[in-house]
Amino acid sequence: MSGIFGVINRKGIDEGTASTAYYGIFSLQHRGQEAAGIAINNSGSFLVHKRDGMVADIFDDITLNTLQGSCAIAHARGSDGISGPDGIQPVVIRSSVGSIALSCDTAILNAERIREELKNQGAIFQTNTDTELILSLFSRNRIVTDTTEQALLKTMQELEGVYAMVIMTEDKLIAVRDPYGLRPLSLGKKGDEWMIASENCSFDALGAEYIRNLEPGEILSISAEEMSSIYYNDQISEAERIKNGKICIFEYVYVARPDSVIDGTNVFKSRYDAGKALAKIHPCDCDLVISAPDSGNPAALGFADGLGVTYGMGLLKNRYVGRTFIKSTQEQRELAVRLKFAVLKEAIRGKKVALVDDSLVRGTTMKHIINFLRDNGASEVHVRLASPEVRFPCYYGVNASSDNELPATHMTDDEICKMIGADSLGYITLDALKAALGGLICDSCSACFDGDYVAGKTEKK
Ligand code: SF4
Ligand code: MG
Image 1 (cartoon, helix red, strand yellow):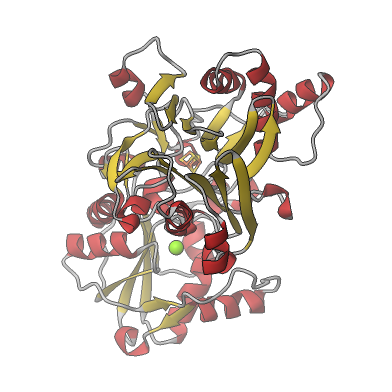
Image 2 (cartoon, rainbow, N blue to C red):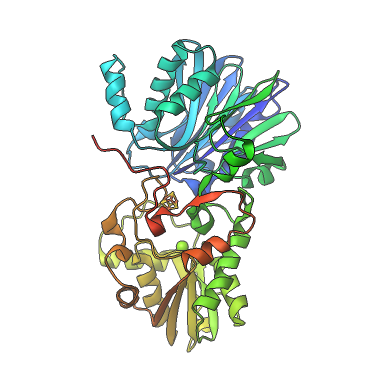
């Protein structure tokens, strides 16, 4: 998973394009912390700066000052199974029609087959990335089509899977949302700068106005002269296209920033409401409700309100723990939890505590947190989860990708409760979680909870 951002100044001038791209992608850091980059178009000449690390460490004033231009795209990369510099985006290539840059957040299910087909037609690949595959496919399609947008449409017809992309050509910024609309993507504006972002929290940070979500299957093209869209599925009405969308439900559970609004649903409110519903489904005899920070905070607040019990701080998260910590032994994993979380002993000593988290995927961190709470005096620890049991792997690059990482595939709730050492364990139901997504204008993917793979599974060779 990753964060993508794009900006174009429709007057064709540089009013701080690089800094808009910087703050835009900075606000999407939660979607990926492995690497980041910005590519900018300076009158047809493309400059790119990208490397490993967090956005704030990669760019400084000097770098941003050298990135001059009127259109830029940016990327914040999450762990995607590809090691080394190959997967760092944006990627810039020269095609038959000039320079083109791509930032994307993808899970292409038929990648191996397409790569083989392209190789058989003479294409060569330097990496194993979806980015290179998409650019190669696009370049081939661009030769036989009249416009960039048609070439992208043809590319979409060949790709299976889920994606959100921003593409920069010599005169345009183009955004693409996959036909399922599984990944979020939205349009915003500030003055003459038009922006595309994975989440609208970027627009708030920039003081820009949120205009709308992209529709599933939309190719939105913005240049100085015009702004227009074509659609993967133009046989159905706009209303149907939107309604058929299958946004990843995990965006609301965990992925998105709580201040974002995705496809009509306010992320914070959906988490709060899920917590409140959870209090009805699995009430708890406790003195204090605390959260597993920070992702569990909104649900814990809702749970406490639903229960009528005080919500308090029991755990604090240390924001300065890097991701490079190697956790190969049990002891190191426990140390990692003690470095990552601090217990407020006075708040929990002698108390029956309800610990609320957004989800339980592998359960290893939860186990250490519970241990840590008991060591610091909690008399009971009851775990409540604002999403159902994760019983199926995710083929779309968001959640755990293999069965054996997921205890709920082979253990009962009671067994998991014992494994993590809780006094009791309760999950929200999928129906209640869906009901908490107030205002949602489309359908959703919930395959990791129910095994219903809306976009199919990864193709094997
Ligand atoms: Fe999101 Fe789960 Fe669907 Fe993956 S399987 S896309 S995490 S809802
Ligand atoms: Mg968490």
